[in-house]
Length: 426
Image (cartoon, rainbow, N blue to C red; front, side, top):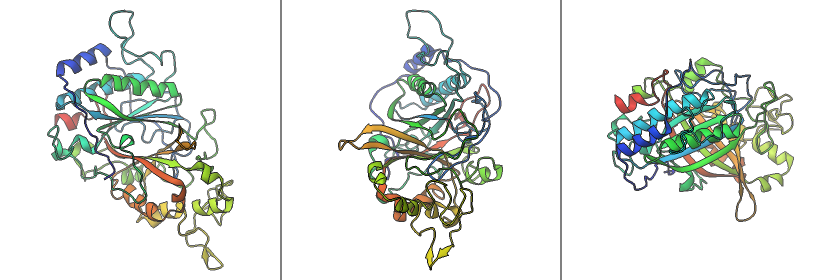
């Protein structure tokens, strides 16, 4: 197993404690309309080209925002462990989170501000005066919420979707328990890093006494907020990223590959399954590799982004093309192994961010890709593709998978309702 099951920490929480905390935060309802607007074209490693989008993305809608929403520049991701034994406490967190998220996505504090000097302020305040910056907040539920070490913690084991299976341990994984798993997930994306930070900080605060942080990840995008028509962005390896992958513009593809359907429980229909992988890139070693070696490992030309054998970035990838009896796009190249053509048609909606988390003990950059993808069933999509990559990808010499998690992201909610209600109350 990958460590996707969160290990709850000891602690006793009463309903009074939780409700007092929520009341102290003063969470209230906020107006909102529709669903997430716009989509993003995605890349082999992560998110691709950004489309023009309004500064505010509604929280309410048929699907949770932050999945097909055009990629924002910044990411704050948090996984939490539950420390309560009461299902109603968990439901209360999702109720409070939904209300607070709807306000923050509209550019409002989690509750109306006041000048009462006695209680803690209802909002931490660092986003006061800032625009919402296309903030989206997406919530997820991990496998360990349904069953942790064989314990049916909240009498919800029978409602666990079969698609929400623990990820297998892949070849060459070097997973760290402190960077993997979790009972709950919060994905906050925005064009302003302080807005994204503020969102996660206040949501974690609202869960005080019910859940505690397990791990955080900050990410920066390969996009530019000054240009909606920019060229395809590049990943930390220097290659264009997002040229030839599933497009959220295609409703048919989204229904086929992203949104959960009638094959699962009713509470997940219209939702999606999130897989997160923290992938460190050995940048110092990569930077010493020759250009020719880098290009054959990826399967594309570094500067133009064209597939090997092509001229332009958008040229079709011909996996059968040969020269002097040799495959032009090598058998172990990343784009060949990640292609839906070599994975029984499996595709995913990728949404990833680069990261830099300081230096390791050897003085090398702890940097890479925080890979996020959404799909209808990770077992036949992410797992199928990753098994092939883990065994054969020529890039594995430079990649270290240090974190792993899978979460079920329920469908969106109407204004005044809350995310996950049909799971906890049905």
